[in-house]
Image 1: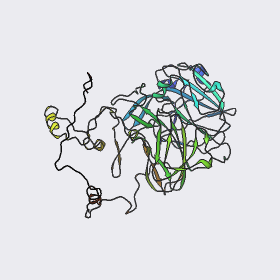
Image 2: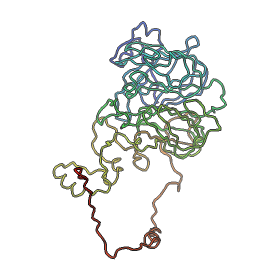
Image 3: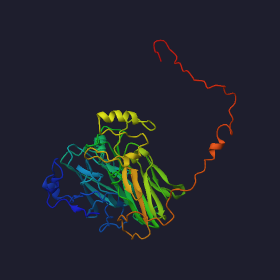
Image 4: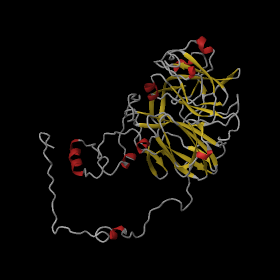
Length: 471
């Protein structure tokens, strides 16, 4: 955890972050002081000291944007700007985001709050902000050209509306959306209930994160913005495993996790060791009569999902997207499958010409996790993450739920690896291995062949000739 620090000690200090256009000192003097976050660690919840009280959320590898109260209005200041995001230790991406990070900070308000958001554009092109899922005046919906003129570089626009309903929402640009979202511009918005809500239970821990994806070539720093589905970095809050922090809870805590999807495909999010209820969607809290226990919930494109469960099983539990390609880091998709192909003869010949030639993939891809193969600079390994028993062989959208009985209330520090009680870890069988029973039951005895030829026959296949096609 790190403390957020004020980015402006004077009106022009923010210009150190980017080389884009600047905002005049006169204009900035009236704005709430923008706050920058320079680190990717998960920050402790921001407990409200002004405005209506609420139970704050924790943003995975992120933070909540501070505000100021101005005559009863809650004022925030977002700065759209180029940022450098460390997606995993040693791997940095040059993205666009808000207030120093991508995704931008989470905005937390209370149902009924009047909210004023100043948006300063320090990008090299115009932008806007769409408040995804909110009920608000049409002119505040943020679709450039439709609801408002785009915010030019160097200008600040003001959005103002009442947060009318409690729930989980998102914000993102609605101007050159393909480019700006592919570059990482997005953030989370939480509206807490004003009073006790019959469908919203109190929880001990409330986590939020966004699903987002990038296509960054190994050795490169900037995403390819034209990619539609074939991304190579599937991330949570612009972080990839092992760079994603664990979700740390105390045993028997009631836990809520809010997930938003701003990628271009769906993600079946799967939790090990516990069953959860989907308690909220884009439309707000779900009726209790519709809730079913699940271990996986699909989060479609542009959707939010809110899950809740009782963390009553100690341990380190995997928590991930169940699309297996989404738990890998940068990988080539055009590589042929070589499983079962004997490379040894050809490898000997190639090694005479290329001494560093390395055979890959003939036994599967697990070797990639521990292979000491040199990678281009600024490249996240494809399968990695060292666990207490070896490589976890994961990347991308993967993290862990860490449940500990001795975790203090409100303590989110990583407690380290779980210490399993004796006799509770899978182990190797060292006794005598009997022949599998199926060997005696399959084939001739269970289904005896009939009318077989006396001698083996070699089948000759002749392709038909169709005119000039010559298939």
